[in-house]
Amino acid sequence: MSSSSSTRVSQLGAAGLLAALLAAVCLLHAGGAAAAELCVDYYDCTCPDAYKIVQGVLMEAHQSDPRIFASLIRLHFHDCFVQGCDGSLLLDTFDGMESEKDARPNNGSARGFEVVDAAKAALEDACPGVVSCADILAIAAEISVELSGGPGWNVLLGRLDSFTSSKADAENLPGPFDGLDVLRAKFRNATLDDTTDLVALSGGHTFGRVQCQFVTGRLYNFSGTNQPDPTLDATYRAFLSQRCPRNGDGTSLNDLDPTTPDNFDKNYFTNLEVNRGFLQSDQELKSDPGAAGTTAPIVDRFAGSQEAFFSSFVTSMIKMGNIRPITDPSQGEVRNRCAFVNSN
Image 1: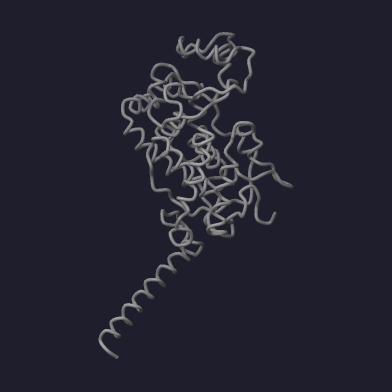
Image 2: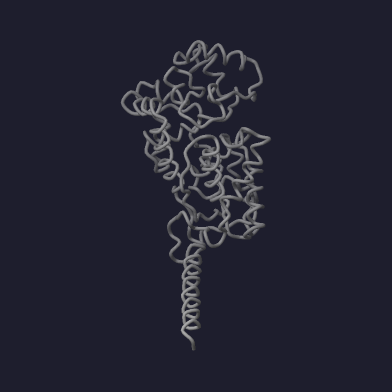
């Protein structure tokens, strides 16, 4: 054999060895014994265009629905707080199981399911049976924030989808009327920090819309007093009273952040500084008497530094994405359709 032929065989052998090693890594990531932790490159071999595919679906959806980015990050949040980040929120009700979609905090307000379904369909065309619905939610949340002017981050992937949904647990999601003590307890129960994670993730309310029914109590009958919430800025209260009259349509929509309603920025916190938080649960972070020694200083810090907010938000989103993910194939699956377990 000539030296050139020998060199070529050697190169082919090295390439073959590298391919075999990559294949072995991909098999492990796709569900082998070493797939116990989430990782950034989980789909690099099995569905390398997964992120771009989801991004394309979201960008198309946003052209006709400017609310969709805020709606998708909310889906990820509500999914992770119930049973962990397992796609359980996406399941429809079926025999013997009531869907989280029907729970009070989700029914009539959680939205974006059709966009998740469209992303799933596109991924199934490209790489069937590979990308979980739970991971689609995590990817969509990051894309939604980044395309709205917020920070980007490396999304940890490798979640499987649950076989069940829990309407009962979803009834206890953090709510718009919760006081600070209740909010802190719910974050602790979700294995998140009850100060920095609470404030940072609440900053997701810097974009999106909310229905009048969630503010009318603050406008007209706060805590049963027949008076407005005293922490609500008078000018902002007058503006909201026109938008949400006492006997008006409770489903009418308002901007959570009236200054930059579709941008992901620190203005949510600057609004809280001047008592212009739309939801009671938002303003509690600054105005509750107990906030002075817990959450109010964090609100102040984020209001003064978008960089500080973005940095903490990324950290908290990664932590939230790690709430009880399913990685054991005996405990979960990659659903073919996000609303149904595969046996259905």
